[in-house]
Image 1 (spheres, helix red, strand yellow):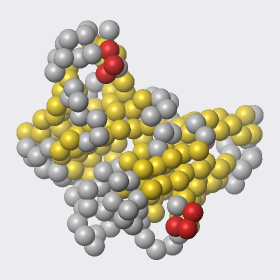
Image 2 (cartoon, chains in turn purple, blue; image 1 turned 30 degrees about the vertical axis):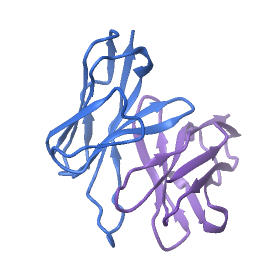
Image 3 (cartoon, chains in turn green, yellow; image 1 turned 180 degrees about the vertical axis):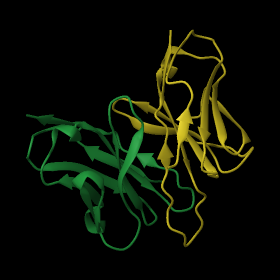
Image 4 (cartoon, chains in turn purple, green; image 1 turned 120 degrees about the vertical axis):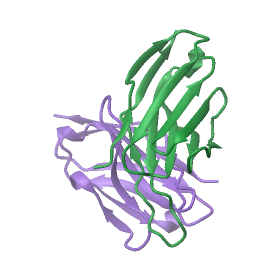
Length: 113
Length: 117
């Protein structure tokens, strides 16, 4: 079975500061990993995904994530936070065949001016 | 652009009512999913479907059923709504994945907020 743990239900950073959202996964098969963002009253938008190949994945809006198999982690980072980054972020894991996403609990990111 | 449309954004229903949540996608996707989103729990899979008339239970199917009579439409049904089904419901779709193929992106609708009173 696959599972995801997001460390920290709320993260607050200052505008211009580094954003780091933590995600650890558990999977018995090679994992496919995702970060989604949800703005208020909206659905989920894909930020980035890791399937195979390069372990550093770049996504939209300046976000990137690094797959570390030895640490079973897929942390999301952005060098400089913007006010528009305030949202809820979800890490998810899937397998290739079923393509059912298993989500973490979510992390709400707040940006302080 | 892929579009996943959930026709009802906000619903208020009474306990015991039968509730239909409708989802339509316009990209000929084989896979469709219904998730439920609750604070602190993330998204949990209720049901999914690989093809017309095909359905499989997800992690929390109790109290729900689904219908997929046409490829583009996937309906979630609450036979007798209860207050603990008050939640945000998200529909999603994707192309069918096969071994050796790239994992296909899963697209989400904007969600349906259901309140059961």
